[in-house]
Image: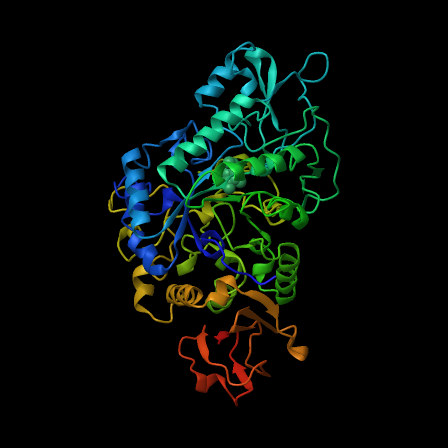
Length: 556
Ligand code: GLC
């Protein structure tokens, strides 16, 4: 089927802001909405038009906003509803789209609903959460064997009512009970509240865990510590607590809800599972979640293994073909920064971003990736991140490579590096330390310096984002691999075709010059990741080209 008339959310590029770390306008060491507003021009110039914000709703901030105590209020740490309205207006005036992060799955223990619910067994809000008696005669063993996503039992005991409450993530984030129609209605109305204000979409936090088995059947044992295929984590196959049939029905309802709105809104789900399961989240007729995150690139593949990368792209193309919209995610607020996986190799990063911005689907850029921010080291025990604290005494820190998230996510959440000023220009107040220390590479890696250098990573992102917008085939076209027999293990090549427009992409994964024949004679060079390389440096004759180590090129 020939792609055509794609919707804005199929063609867009999404940029994720972690509000706490973007720009502090008040000088208290924590980023805020006004700070973000002051950087909208930067984002516009960069060339991204959809911005997803990690949560800034009222919250005790135990999980920095992923523990909400009022879904319809802005946390004073980040500003006021006025600031939000201003942000929305300023974004729409610049033709940018605003995507909020909605945590439907759970609330904070400080949410008034939970306080009521926990107060006694007869409270009208009791059934808004999942309370159960314990096992054994004295009830002192959790109701079943379910493990939380961060390890250990997924149940917390409350002595006052002698019952256990279920949580999928951390104990202070109890899961809402979506089998109760009042919960569903309230949360749907919350979505409408924001949609009526004009927000363009939602990123839906751990949506695969919205429903759990009514009978609370025990999960089976798994031999793997982590596997996407059968949703295994910590040696348990999450058969009865994740990806339930009810969850897929729920997603269809969510889509119906946003379909009530014009202009069109969108939903991107944070869900985990095998690729077939992920595909099912798009709905049988592309009528469910508009997109889901595909995380495979956030770990193994970014270690620059061409075979793995090719396999992942093929798998995505096969399982999530047009009209479904795949996503290409290189990092987020839970994962290691991709440049650190590449050991800081900027040339490799330039190749990978050329790939990300020329594949079929929607690229997700995590703030700071555009200047090559890297992980910053933090001690687990003094970690701001509650996961870091939870794992502080855990003897095997290497486990993080196996389970897909960092043990302290502080390391990928450090303040944005804007300039050579104190605190890298993140906070105007020299006296106050930012909530997380700024990377000590900020004198070399920052926006101010990179802006001036045409060969910088920042300018590569800008150039690619511009090219992506200019050529329809890059956002709307089909993707076909180009066969390069003998260089199969060194060069990844594909074409993007839309109508008469054909764009060719060649990526040299080898750490040396390579000369080879291209698929079309004398195409025009529109981009090289080596800033200075011109056609005369690349073409040997009209059919043969020479690429430098890790060079990425685009032809038309
Ligand atoms: C998601 C978020 C993560 C958060 C968790 C609990 O995985 O990405 O940051 O801590 O859900 O809401």
